[in-house]
Length: 536
Image 1 (cartoon, one colour):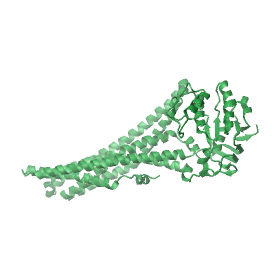
Image 2 (cartoon, rainbow, N blue to C red; image 1 turned 90 degrees about the horizontal axis):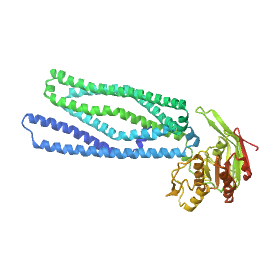
Image 3 (cartoon, one colour; image 1 turned 120 degrees about the vertical axis):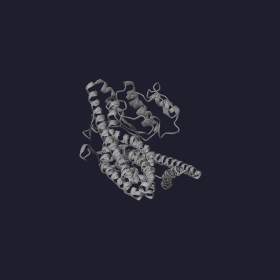
Image 4 (cartoon, rainbow, N blue to C red; image 1 turned 30 degrees about the vertical axis):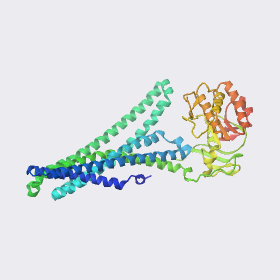
């Protein structure tokens, strides 16, 4: 998404803000003109009270217009940032699973937090810069009225200063972009630091290697940011030197050639000194505004990446036309691909039929494609080839959202949410029964729509995820190694009591398991081997 489109989304009262900024700039210069006039009258012993009253009126106008512009801009920018974040979050949940699996989360976090904050903080700076620009324009008009030659020389110096800045601005923006990309990697390294803390504590060399990577990245970013900062400071200093040089020419050289210029020299010098302030504000704000520009580009790039892989959000979602009786995969395949589009691992072609009310076990070695098959079967992955049917009718892309609603899933890496999202009117007694069934009644409680304790062991987390899945009351349950590494008593209860009870309720169960002792519980057993379904 281009930055111009982002700016078009901002629903701020731009015309009113612009008008107030113009009034504020004009009032600022009127204050200068009043002071200059009053100073001249003081020197002539002719100061009048009306100038004091006029000064107060203009000063109040300046304060009011500045406050209005600041307040409206802050409201508009925060609303704009909120809208962008919400929209990107909506697109993230609407994108495809394999995109999320292959994405750099650190990069996403950086763009949604740090970049958004940069844009948010630029609001007041932007208004200050625009207001300084308006002051500059009215000051130049005032200067043109005082001395046309001073005005022309100031314009020439301004053009030179702007040219020099723009000459280096692109290079600075590119370096700022590289710096933000490097900072995005921090999240990835810190994820390794936190998620792999136990492994790092057990292996000093591994810990040192990871720390060396973090240290190197920090130092590279430091060098890059220092370089950019020095360039920005150098440009700022040069811009100010231009105007101090201009002041020298106007005060010491030009009066020798123009007598009329000499008569207004104190007003001209005061105006030039007054102009240096707004110019300094504009120039000093440019680095931060450049960072905001880069931040907007980063958000636009993220949104463009999401748009490329989003499918469902553009479809008019349609419900399934009939109740689930059978699910079929007909010569269905799926391939993982690298960034160049070359296949890394594939499953299929697969022919599979799952009937309502049966218990199906899936077995196979690690890496054989069991989890990929589950994701394909549940619609988390779309078939690369072949078809995915329900009741012998192809499932259209605009029906996948409804199709997934058939499933309650506990994957091997099940995530526990802080509360039971999507569920209402939960029976507390049923939750207590399920917690007791999963032997979790002493580990956590259900209160006010959430569980009191989520800091559990891996097995306990999967059992708590089972409780949440059963509460969803879906037609099909999928359990990926749910009973793995559990004690014999629980495994016996899970296979011989819990699963048959779910089947008796009319549920369909698909479970990945290696517990051959309980294969007799299943109606069918499927085996995955090197991405293929083979006879068991």
